[in-house]
Each structure stands twice: as C-alpha cells, then as structure tokens.
Length: 311
Image (cartoon, rainbow, N blue to C red; front, side):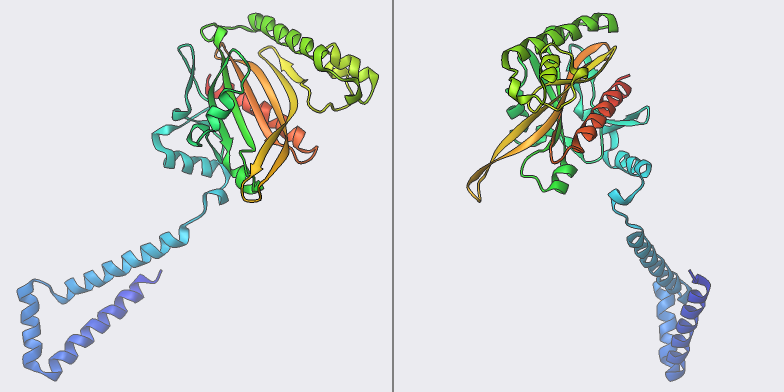
C-alpha cells in the first residue's frame, strides 16, 4: 500500500482548495476559516476524517479479497474454522472432532459419535430417525443417526444415501464389558447369524457348493465369491466384530409417479466403547464394486475414532 503518497496527494488537494477559495474572495476565505474554528474542525481534522474513511474502505476491500470457501481450505485449517463457527458445541479429542449436541447414553455413560466434514444430525431431518427406529433389531434402541449431507448433494440422490446408526442393546445398557466378557457376546452373535443362515441360505445364490457350505457353517473367510443379500463377517478383534451385507432402498418419485429401487451396501459393527456395548450400522448407496472397500475402510475409521473421542 502507498499510504505516504496517498496522504501527500490529499494534503495538496486540500491546501489548494483552501487557497483558491481565499484568493477568489478574501472575505469568504476568512469566513470559512472562522467557521471552521467555531465548529472546532480544522483542515487537519478534516484530513483525518478523509484518511480514516479511506483506511476503512481499504480494510473492507481486503476482507472481501480474503474470503475463501470452507471446502477450499486444507483439512486442519477447515477443522479450526468449523470449531470457531460451531463454538461451544464443537470439541476435539486426540485429533478427532465431535459435537456435544450429538451425545447419547448407555445407562449413565455419555457417548459421542465422531464428527466428519459434511455430516449432519439425522434427528433434524423429518421422519428419518423414526423411520429407522422401528426397523431396527429387536432389543436395540436407536440412540443417534447422522448422515452425510455432502454425499447426498454430490450424488444428486433423492434420499439419504450415506448414514450411520448408533444402537444401544437394552439388556446391556447398564453393563460393563471387558474383552473377555465381550467374547461371549461375539460368540452369541455368530451363533445367531449362523442359525438364521441355515433357514434362508439358497444354494443357487452361491458361485460354488464349497462357498455354500462355508457360508452355512460360518466359515466366511473360506468363501471366494460375493453373496448378495447375506451377512458376511468382514473383520473382528478383541473388542469388535463387523459384518458386511447388502440391502436396497425402495422409493417413489412423486413427480414421475414411479417406484424405484436402489442397491445399498452396509456394515454392522458390535463393539465396546468405554466398556459399553454399542452397535453401529453404516449404510451407503452402491454404484460399483469399488464402493465396498470404501465402505469397509470408513467403517474401520469410524470404529477407531469412536474409541478416541470417548476415551
């Protein structure tokens, strides 16, 4: 900025105006000076006002120039901006963000889902929470639903097509778990799923007889083919077990007056968080096979971040 030159230019202009007025009519020039003195405003005072206005205008221009969209910022800077915008509702632990208003409980223990860019509270979308609450697994209470609003916008979807559901088992809401006691729960979950498979597994849906037998008896890691519609164990550890499955969304386009179906992929994770048992479903629209590893990777990240923010 060239303020010194700017100041000298304004000073010369002001001085010339005063001199010209005085030479044109001495009496008028005298009256002008007397008027300024009476009002308490000298030529220096007027110059200060001009300079102040000029500085304010320059500041406004600089602010407009510095405006940057939130999504254009680097991840760390964007997180800091989000923290300032959300104020006291936004917190961070171990480098992972979470929102205080997204709290849910297991017994008397407060738990929080991680916060990610573009994700919103599902309770704020009319009917979304209620719709999934009654569809849930018997004995589990839906405590929180969050959805990826940015993904909806990017895909132009007519429905919520990427979301996470957080469930609390009613029978264990006040129980505390260790890896040892949770192992019994995992075995119970496996037995229940394998028992159900024997009821509905259809041979023609499997690529080979070997896959059919492996699936029927719970040997998922021996299977070579993908089976649409069935729960398959994806991974497990001392404090979690994750299943992968496929589903579909059935909707109705009011404008076109036609029904449609969209394939979905999902994971169901049973895990320990602060010694409490939580079930987390992650559901995403399925477009191609590349979406499966993306979903599994996100599920793993969510599970790890869930432990971090509730540590």
